[in-house]
Image (cartoon, rainbow, N blue to C red; front, side):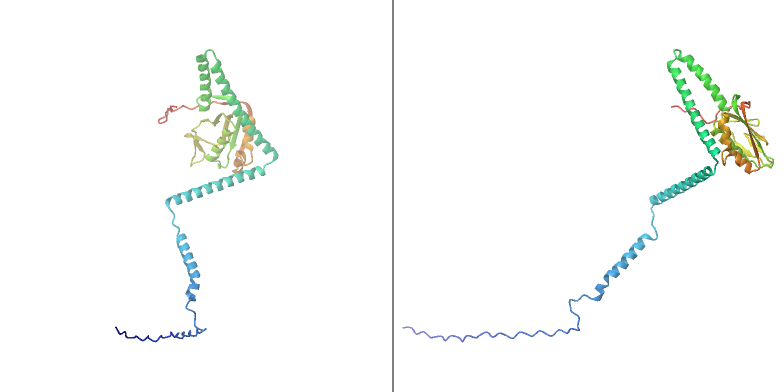
Length: 289
């Protein structure tokens, strides 16, 4: 028989809850640890100033590329040209605004005459083309048209004499104030009005005629001295040539402002008898099509 020793149970210990630590009182005067510092509130102002500085540094001094500089120069040139054009147009309009009614009528008549002249030339060319196309003997017709054209070109080139209706413009310059540029302006005005043959004193005017002022007085035209009074013998429609010279601010008014006197005589027949010798071109050659 075995003997068993009885084991006494250990006494159960009850868990005793430890008292919770009381929270420490928070001082209201002390700033909270989660509060943002004042430097953070000022950050937007600091960022704004930095952005302005960066913008200023990017804009000044300006950094232009070569392409931008070329574009700027082109725009400036275009603006300057437009300003000059507008100013010249305004000056022309101011002259017309102050013109008399009869002067405006003459200007309109001159424009109508130019248009009619161009229409007539167009009709003549179309007629010549029709003759060449419809002629049974085209070779003979072509020769006839060629001879006619050579005569016309001779008048324009100044190699043959010319006659027809026109005007004689005489410019008296007792003070010697008329210069070469004024005579050139007169020539250009006559050409624009439809002059077909022009002679100044004894010099035939052609496409390459040049004017030069002489130191001793007078004007040199194509190497020949021409003294006043300057006599323009012009073949053309007198009804077109005379108003062109008398428009406000035109040739006659300009000459009178320089104490010169311009006299215009319309004639049913004037003769331009001065001719020029054609020179063989040294450099220019006919261009092939």
